[in-house]
Length: 437
Image 1: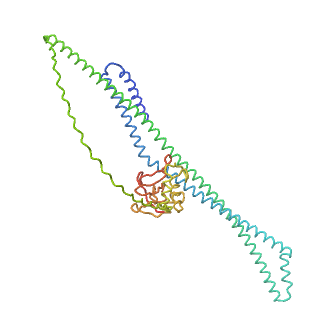
Image 2 (image 1 turned 180 degrees about the vertical axis):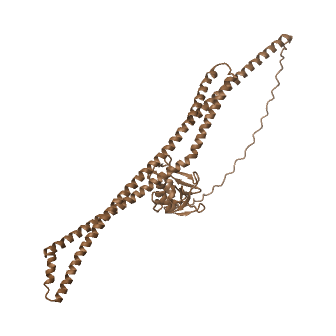
């Protein structure tokens, strides 16, 4: 509704401006009514601009919220990518374990088959009974019972091993299936996070672009209305001034005519000539001889000093210095979701690569980077420290990170549509906390 009202006002302003234009082109002096109408058109155009400026002010107030949504979605995408990589590794480990347990179960089944075949070839249970009945005395019977127990225990061990190996193989296969499901879920989370980021960016850019276009049209209409008003006013002032000047000139001509008619003629004097005065010749001064300059004795110049030895080259920077040097080298490069160089970056991709140049390993996720740093206060902040923005004040809510370079400044990759830049730490909403790598 507001945009419709603004459009009506703009149409009225533009129509008023066009209607006033022919009046300004006529040779007649613009009337007071024409100027009043132009002023009304200018006032209407100013009102339309005021409405649009208020809308832009509201959008600007919402911009921080939109940027937080975008940054949070992008960092959620980075976190989902890390979890996806972890799920893929877990799936690979589970698959290897399943294959290993399956091989063990297969080996146990082979051993069990061999024992069964050997038992069958010896008569099975009947051979065990005949072995006991064929004992000649009690001592032989005792020995045969012990041997039977050993064989039976061996058989039972093989059965038990086969059962355990089969169960472990089934459990490992189930873990592999669960890891696969976790990987797919992580992949879907990553896709959803990226889609949310894209939607937030599109919403923000479309809303601002539409209102800015409307405002530009309103400003143009206001400028046209002001130009029409000024032109009419100038024409009226100029016309009135010319009319007044013509009236004064007419009255002055009439006055001179009356004076000429009333005054008698005056005689014209004869000019007299006077002789020219004699010219006195100038006296020239006699020249004074100048004293020749005395020669300056020549001196032998001192030998030049030997050149200073060149300064030794600076040692290669390490740690925070190297991280900052890397970040400076990326200034002007574009922003891209999930990018970590060499041509584009997102916020955590830039800080990850910067500290990689400084000899430290950080994950490509601002939440994980916050968890791996030591908290410091703003008073303790030193070049190379990381600056974090969080929607809950904790590492779990971090959605943006920058690299402190000293003097209240940082280098960061801000958001889609902007490049890596040097910016004040407090250029946006205040940071949540600071961390030392």
